[in-house]
Length: 512
Image (tube, rainbow, N blue to C red; front, side, top):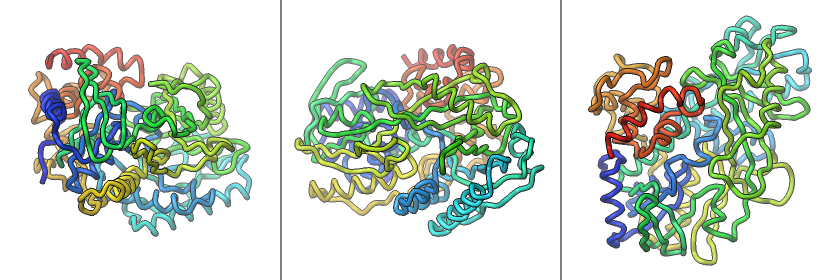
């Protein structure tokens, strides 16, 4: 059974009222990131009655601060963690072929062969890329979806990454991984697909006093609170999981990215992959992204202390990224070239030892003394697998009647085979719109009631007015920040935000 995918004010009010009136539930999920929405989707498609609550907005936390990569697990293979490497490759293939082919594309990764890379290091990278090819084959992902790795000549390397250092360049090693058009868009697509299958998706609703069978919900907009009961309560709040279950021990790790105008890197078509001096199997990536940008990341630093709502990069991390990138560039990047920056906290399990870069990315499912089922750790690529594991455990622990997991072959909203997909050809629509919405792109324009729906929200920004409206009418956006910072990523660059904010305010005001 499928229903409407639209998340909006009207639906939220009706579903909040139903919960306040005692609507029976099998599962309550706390947390509206990729893990929580994945669990809600899995539960709904198994026939369970599920509600998800999120204190802020969809993808408010770590889920919007990633590298926008769907990793094949190569790094984990290098550290001997074969299980997570294999699972990552399998989950990447599922996303690229079945779940979200519209949101995940093959991204070329170029390791330049510069004089600093000795033969041993070069052999190690080549071996790693060959192992990545093996993982891809093992996962059943065809080379038509993810091309094989290979060596390229100097001219081709410069063509793909025009600002790569020319002095002593001997070509490059090229491999492919999965790249998301945007991580927050994936969260929104998963949430809307869950709603399509009957899940209640409620943002701006806080959760407190959680036990194994109940939780107090507070509408952050009205301030009204009420208790709800369910047969299972699942904590999927990521780095904030310890606030729901105080017995959990997490070790947040901060990953920072810098944002550049793509022109600064010569409008590359490959992610320049730069070895970190003195490290084995750790790289900094300069990745071409939507909206004419390049993201440079990524750090891996301990982040002890209270968990902030919005983490901030440190000056040391910014300098580290610039210095590392400059080892492989013909141009000298400086702070003035940075037009935006962001940081996210990985919810790592605290093992009490080692660097955060070496802490396992495995997840764990644990039950508190109060009966709350928490999922901690894990990584974005494996969100679907993690959700399946959580639901399998929950069904067994609580004796729920549910079908087997269905998400492996389930197309998300925007995938060509999802029922919401339109039959109209997207050929006459902007490529940027199709990249963000896939087969749903024509619906975005068709559903628009605003004036000049195909007009950009600001000069030089390839986001249309119809997308701002759709964010409110179909994607659960309620505020200017929801539109600029999560449904679109305009807000990552302060100057772009300033030029688009009045249009976002116009659409938010129209629904009040």
